[in-house]
Length: 262
Image 1: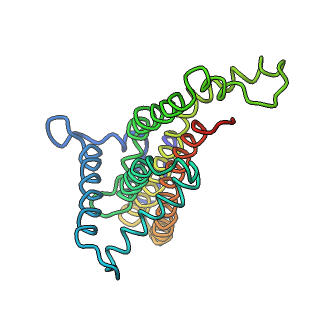
Image 2 (image 1 turned 45 degrees about the vertical axis):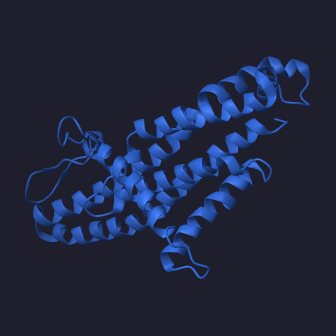
């Protein structure tokens, strides 16, 4: 992308967006826009559930129905399906919080004025993965099976010929204790980073063609803006899917840690 330069019939060179556009200058005292958005997302989520649950009715209002739908989705379609009907209840708040937190921060990327998906900064999903999901699923596994039983369950799958363990056990070790938390974070980060970058390319490119290009090239700005609008809807879908994937995988890791078999 950095090497791409579009020279129009008139005007200067088009400098496409790149990695530098994701590192926004501080607003005040070293506080950046992504930091503010993360805090604001927590306020939005907390206010949404507090307000909608303040006066519950048998026949729910639209807002109560929306809150109940989100809760039911996190509880039954993610936590219970992945962890199991016997063990899922203690983990519903965590899975629901992960899903809604990542969803709101992803959606920020297509909302006017905000227009920045905070999960496009690797530090945020990595913190959720390494500091929240990773300790929880190892802790619950050790608490249930004991340290020796948990390691045996995770590193020595049953039904495998013993010589194969020489190859399989190191792979399982690196996967469970190193790769899982990293790849969990990279999935949502990569999707948000790439999606936002593509939107920037078409939006800024369309603006450049409209204002700087000459002749027939100006007409191409309409095509660029049309692609930007179309990709915004695609990006919205990806934002929801990535929040769901992060929550599903987190619940899946907990379910595997609690299971008696690998």
